[in-house]
Length: 341
Image (cartoon, rainbow, N blue to C red; front, side, top):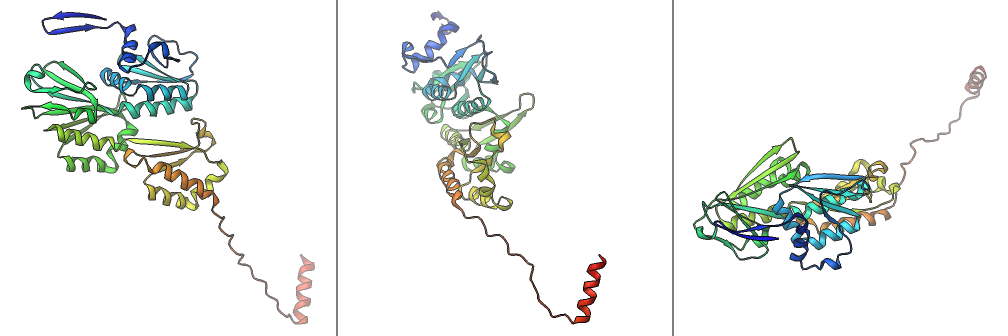
């Protein structure tokens, strides 16, 4: 690492190979104690890792994600024998099994989506225009007359603004997450707009299958409250297994039993068949907004307890046996008819 004094301030030049050491040092982790290198940097050979996917990321948000959630990320990568490979404005999540790659993707985005960049057009230096932040967990950057602060929602509360009224936060999510945040007919977004008096614009980037959210507000408190409410709508997951032979009984006739349970806890439940379950380590997946995360264990317990439900009694036969006395003459006719056939 090299420091140079310039007319604009102190310029920091960091060698790409030293970037990993800075991540570790900022988290107070001794390099010699690192048992596995789950976070790597390109170029890396991933021939032994059959399943991987590449995602576009913001370098500053990625830096903050690894800095603030390093322990959680490494624990998840170790659990599912996966790797996070950092490239130029992108990351590759790779694993030996497709099921593990899908899960680590969810785990990564759970942390990455909690990091936001607050942009303020200051026209000059941030501190000179009454814009500052003393929280060391927030990264401040000044570029093209714009001052930006990147960090978690609770940390952005400490951004101090004087004589500034135009705040903007932009972030992109995949189509599945966008649908979860927006709600049916944009019901969730419209509710947040009414509650916080903010402006939210959603644009679709069809080329990358991404949706860009642009949030504008007049003050920092309103912006932080808007981001806090959006955080509560991000999806969170729980996976567990139930023997395939019990799926039909738990779902119930026309899905009525599982629909009642889902409505009770406001949790979406999917029972995967054997073909679908090949992509996951479990065969039942529950998904709900983060604000309802405590209901995941409750619905799991109710589903497992429903295995003790007695089978509904079989419907009684509608056939009825009737005995009649038939006169001899008719009895002889019936006997003749049987002999003919």
